[in-house]
Image (tube, rainbow over the protein chains, first blue to last red):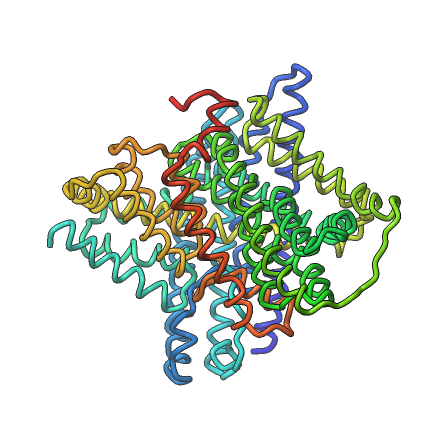
Length: 172
Length: 439
């Protein structure tokens, strides 16, 4: 189980690093777009690719965001419930979160497959292929589901957040 | 069940799900799937994935991660410390100048990074120990920074305004301008209150700390901060001048800020840049997942005719504009105690917007009032994010003292909302003067 935890954490961090590069690339491309326009050149591919990069970055960063407590949640009940109820609630919340991610991952996979088979393209001037954008959804959401699974195992083993006397404060 | 009854059930279930500790983005999707399954049909359910991804395929939304990148770049640098040091060195001779320097520091830093927690953390980390060392009461020191930090979502660039602008199709440039005067006024009022409180205390409990700074010492920190201020001012001019869209401005500002932290602060190691980028993708992912989740939620409400029924129901009250503004302000204030600003805007605006439009209420003015309400949520339990941020940077001050210290500022902001309601020009004058009246 420790191996699984470690593997999921490393994979999530690696995906966050890719997401960071995508965001950086989007920043540079939009800056380039403005510079090109300022010197009288035409913009063609910049706008669409920056949207694709942003979507990719968001989904790829999702498991790391979950692992580091970044997905904002309201854990008010957590503060007032007795330990056993807190543990049960944490198990339910983690299971539901995992199922939602599996659902989104599955739907993303269907969208990516459909876009790949039909050669679907995004709207706009450049019209890039849509499947690479959609492909980041199953990758990100299935990995987020694995991150949830890792959290579930920890919670079940008594190593989860609900067992900490002072659980980590969640950002909002 | 009628649409209104379904709406009431939806409200209760949403809160129950969100309180259970499921991330807000996933909780909204869960509720949407559940309600569409029970009260809708297969057609409604099948549109969820496209709504979820389609919402993100919007160039305007790029403004969010890019301004977040700008904020995390400036927040991770030593710009906050330099800004604080230089303000302190210029103002240390003024009685109570230290507290004023801190509040001004919050206002200026908020303008540079656009994030309330980042502002509270950056200025609080250096400002609170220094104020306590100079005998400022810990309650006041922490309360002032917690409240000063909230200005991050009011003074442009503000993520709250960006999201509001996208949801309501209001000009983001106009919203940014509308936040300037109320932001400056709140800085001045906070500073006046903090100065009056600290002055009285310091007069009764004097402690002499001899300080003196040369002109070069005064200038040194300022010189390092000036490039960041120049970036903010120049991109603001570019945006208001109509030369670039908010997303483009955000990209240029983030790019220049990254260059500046490399050049000015020698932040060029991969590990240091990773810290900046890591925060940026983490926060962007969190916000945009909520945006996508809220889009599914709004779609579900509209598909089940709940949005329309709620809006019609509210029209049926026959309220005057003042009563409506009062009710909406109370609602936003209470919602702000429990939910983060982004979620409140995304979840409530689909219902509130038609009511505001029908009542001919200025959307820019309302945005500023709403933002100040949401600011209060940042320093009021149970959510009170800034309170916890301050607790993190000043661990020696009990949380209770931080909360008590923030309480007078909550009062000030409530009073300011009343003033703003009576004098809308405080918010609307600057955008109307620079961009012409809204059409």
